Length: 132
Ligand SMILES: [Zn+2]
Image (cartoon, rainbow, N blue to C red; front, side):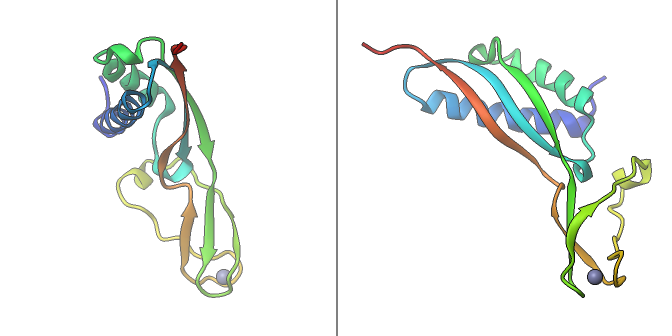
């Protein structure tokens, strides 16, 4: 069963790639799509690939397209002392429902998550037919 979270992300991802491919003159197909998945986005890579397969099948231009998932570590920025650095994210099911409040390991102040919460398309390989 596809999970709704990953399915909706896969659907947005395919739409964005199809739009980009259609807008590119001479583009006949899509190759590798590099996707950056933040550790705190709580996306299952297996589920995302599975859902991507389902959604991409509906789009002829996506035939042969593949997904390369690159994990992005979480980076925090402290509002108290200004510390910027990585944050270890545990694979805790509770995180999927409520985003925990993170505190700075140095001063205990609240931190902002500056990286690792999003799913972004980093690169898309477009196959272009030679136009003479
Ligand atoms: Zn701090």
